[in-house]
Image (cartoon, rainbow, N blue to C red; front, side, top):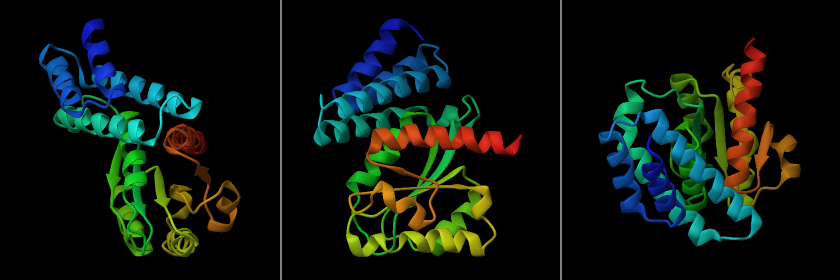
Length: 218
């Protein structure tokens, strides 16, 4: 992938230019770049966006706009990705817990994960534990990620771990939690493997969890 094309795509994402990011990704593919090269550029932008957010150099609106731009770019290379032209970093099933209809934070995390090279299956909001189990059984993901944004719905988080355990699937998947109503100290209580305080941290933690899974399989 040419340096100019790489910079054009990364800049469009960092500036939250959804349409330009999609066009830049498509242009790179048409110019002969592989899906993996384009995905690497998107991942680079995701890392930089996460760094800026954690450093206080950008805020939630910029993060959301960048995530939407990443989604647009990933959408343009999906055909190549689905043909196996690029190996995903891992597979994530994500959703907001049952009773929780808060979408924005989860969408940012899903887009950041996709931009970082994960194959993401977004179940949306108000997702019961049984549906998480169904999708884990069908898709065999590396990670289940659940979010809760109010105190009452956060009480549902342990139900997901318990349902996976009852189905005999818990040892096969890592469980990541987050959201405004969730704290790091709640991970053990929820039966989770890890917690992500924000989208940038969720991506870093997801990478670590996938590596941990690979070591466990050896």
